[in-house]
Length: 193
Image (cartoon, rainbow, N blue to C red; front, side, top):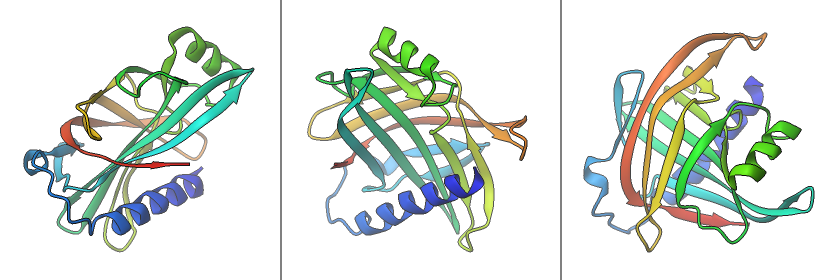
């Protein structure tokens, strides 16, 4: 599990680094911050990415899936917060997503998703803070509550979350909770399959 989370983090950070050289000027990013465990991280322009996968199916139901990754910086620390969003094909990403805490390939997850038409997969959503030397300071996933995404047009989103991500030991026992507060409005780099 730790290798999967670290690999996911490296993918997100690599994507961020390639995109961070963008010359676009996001007028809303000046005050964008994410608070993780009481520490504030600046969210610079070009550091919010939507990785979108269209036309997926489960049990003959067509749906789309987007992972939204928010990257913040504080000194030599890099923080990432991600949300794995599922929504019926043809629906916009915009909306409030209940976070489901069962495995994303579990029958119960899809039954919950089919009833709600929009759902966030908790087990594949993550919150990580690393030092510049790749030392993990926080490694959490499976947030609780809801996340809200508002599409303001032209790939400018408002993303809001106020809750806890869970920290697990090697036996998957919950050992801690990491508070995360996020209320940002920024241009999002959308990458589709």
